[in-house]
Image (tube, rainbow, N blue to C red; front, side, top):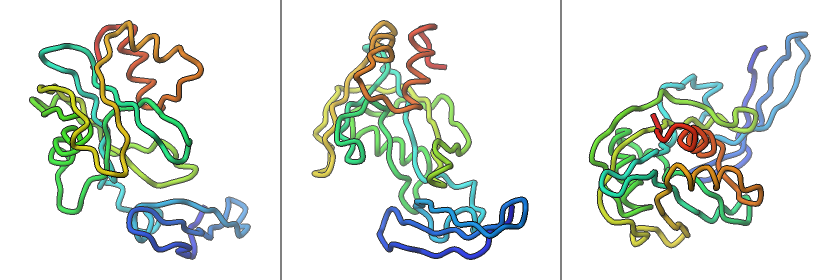
Length: 192
């Protein structure tokens, strides 16, 4: 496989569509379309070390339970359950992005960082977006007061039993990362 030309189709701030020209293993010319938050996309820049976003798996120190959000997602046209998450701003560290996003989406404060994944990819057939999963302990009172006008987010805490119920409810839309972590939490009572 060999990447050739890359044509940028759109020109937006946070996400663009690219036409990737490549040769398959039989050296036949092919085209693939991807969405990317990077210009140029990672298949050209090879900047796989810098994550685009953070996903925060937060355990509340005082009340117990794991922080989950119910957020309206435009591509789905419905609410989806997930973890607090967001883009890493230019010049921002992973920890700074986590601290900012957790507060904006839930009103909670990071008390301690526990574990951070390397950049990982959740839908590489469609995008080169990478995220870092950050496990943390948090404090404070849940609030959605820090949500921006474009966000409709309802934060709450789930116990292991509530996580089990959420994961087994077929009419609920759940983010894949959230489902995997909550399913393990439901079975073990631990997130790490």
